[in-house]
Each structure stands twice: as C-alpha cells, then as structure tokens.
Length: 367
Image (cartoon, rainbow, N blue to C red; front, top):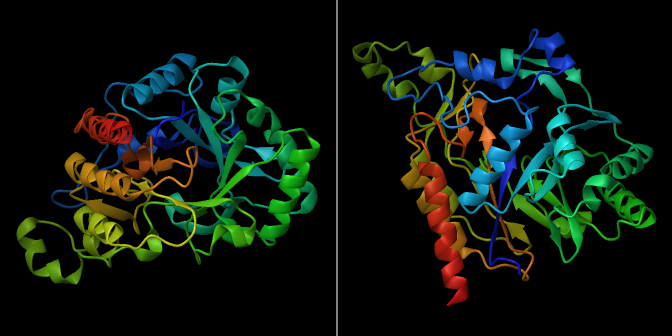
C-alpha cells in the first residue's frame, strides 16, 4: 500500500575517488577534502560541517550504503533520488549506484535524476574551464534510455502507476527538449520498459507547465535561486566589522541570506496550476567549494526546517494516490552544507524533525 506521502531525498554519489577527479583535483580527491578544510568566514558562520555517525565514508563500501538506507528508512524517508551523470555515453560517479543495482542491496527504493550540466572548475573560480561537456543528440537520447533500462527494470525503482520516475535537472539546457522527451518515450516502449513518468526540476530559467514540454510533472528545486530574497548582509554591516574583527570581504564577496527569510519567502509563494512536487532544503552553504562567491544561508536550524517542511506537507494535496512526492534537498550534499545525515553540531535533529512531520502527515491521512 502506498503511503499518503513519499518523501524522497536527493543523493550525491560523489564520495569515492575516480580517475577524472584524480587528474583534475589531485590523487584520491573526494568532496571530503573540501569539507574538511572549510573554515568559518564571519561570526556565527557554521563551518566546517563535519559528519557524525557515518564519518568520512567511502561510497564504494556496501556497509556504508546499507547504513545510509537504514538511517533514512528509520526517519521516514521513502527513497533516494540519485544524481546520475551522463555525458554522451560517458558516465562518471556511477559506481555507488551501479553496485546498488548489481547487488540488490540495500533493499531501499530509488530513482534517478540526470544532472545534465557541464562540469567546470567552479570550485576554484575558473568557471569558464569546462572539464566535461554535454553533447546532445537524438542518437544519444536513445543510447541514454538503453543505458537506463536495467535501473528502470529493478523492483526497487520508484514508480507512479507502474511507470519509472526519471528526473531531469536542467531542461533549459536541452536544445530540443520536446524531441528528447519524445525519443525517450519511444525508445522506452521499444525496449519493453513501457511508459515513463518524467519530471523536470524547476531550476534556472522559466517554469512552464511541464506537460507543454512533454513531461508529466515538475519538481520544485530548493534553493529556488531566481526567487530567493536579496543579499541581506553587505555594506550595511561595515560599521560593525572592525569591532567584530572581520574583514569586509567575507560579507561583500559572498551572498549571505538569513534562512528565516528564505523559508518565509518560499512558504508565501502561490501553488502553480500544474503538477509540481514541493521541496525543502535543510540548509545551504557552498563556501567549502568556493573561495569567494559562495551562497550562504545563515541561522538555519532544525526547528526552522521543520516549520517549512510542515507547511509544505500540510499544503500539498497529492495529484493521485501515487503522485504523492515531496523532495528534500539533500541527503548528503556535505560541501554545500546541505544534508540530513547527522553532523557534529546538530546530530540527528534534522532527521528527527523530518520524522515528526512525516509521522503527523501519515496519521492525518489515516484519520
């Protein structure tokens, strides 16, 4: 029996070394390198985010993946949405998910989100140097669907009325999005997969009705960058910087926004007239990745996150018994300060907040 709501956590499969990152960033590099060296840049800035229960794990280890799934299930998460990286037939960071697929373990639901941006040297400020470039075309669309077929056939794969759910992160980057969608659907039928349930993430660019592009629904991406409050910490704070012993550059060179203002703005938004699955983020701070130009939410707490999650859960009416998703970004984006996994500051409090809201929603649905 399907739950009243299915909470899906976005999952980053990065935390293991790969040859490409060895070449670009140094032997043995993983995101933990950025996480561990991060420092607080101004008073009250929570950095570094250091893992608690699961430690600095390696996703090549089956035990780690099992522990993650057990923890997620314990706190009411329905499944993981793994980021999937495909560059015209080339895959990267695929090993954790491929091992989940091949081994049948953990027995925990999943779906995939194609993170279809170019890879660049954004982490050290060299935005224009492309490391891996996306190349789109009809034949690649067909090859892509063939590569996805084994995952879609897995009994653990998250579905809507039998249709495997597949999410696209940046549909605005597809040169002919309607052709791509039509090609995927045609190829899926030919392969015996049947019908797909396709979602587009509302990230950058306009947010049209997804059905006009051939998608079944949209997913709200949080943080919703185009609609965030303006920077709230800047030159107005210059008069107190000297007293605090802080260099002005910490405020001027980063976009710093109060998490309370983010949640207030997001909760005040109207629900669009198309199928949109809501989303929340527990926090955000990518200063571990960026020397300057970081986006930082200050004063995020489990209580504020819980209030936001409770709001969207109460407001969201599933479109059908199985069109009942809410998304949480993210399970383990440690270098973006964005994780449900326990950290040394908050422990299990974000997970406990999630469980309270989902349990209350489940009881309301049964009443």
